[in-house]
Length: 179
Image (cartoon, rainbow, N blue to C red; front, side, top):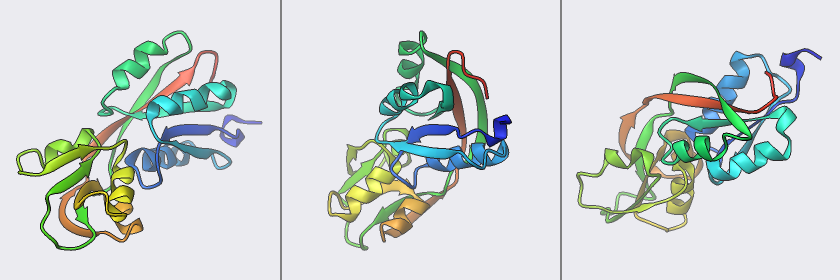
């Protein structure tokens, strides 16, 4: 079986609608891995555990601005290592809400929080951009910083569009694994 026919699992940050998920699909498409799949986890730390349950056919895809990527790299030096990095634009990053009511509380992953840090919002941190949209849609906050894809999937109204961001993504392989 050639490498591009191999059933590779790319473990990354979910839920669906994250920039990491988009990067994982992009990565697989660029390498013509048609039989491969993307496995979403609530944190990249949990994605590492997913990789290590089937290390021969798994890899970790991280985002270079993930708040604790340095810890993931250094805590797992005995089992995996950084293999490569690539750059691609994210989904459009947006401030979204259920409606146009005044915004007091905003959910955000730590990485894009700077988009609104100069505003007088009560910012609450969550595990991903898509998790922010999901929680916002159920009334967990007035608004969220999320991706345009996650906002649409959760029927949120876009209040402000910050556009896509050129972003780096990292590929981490268990030792002894080849692509």
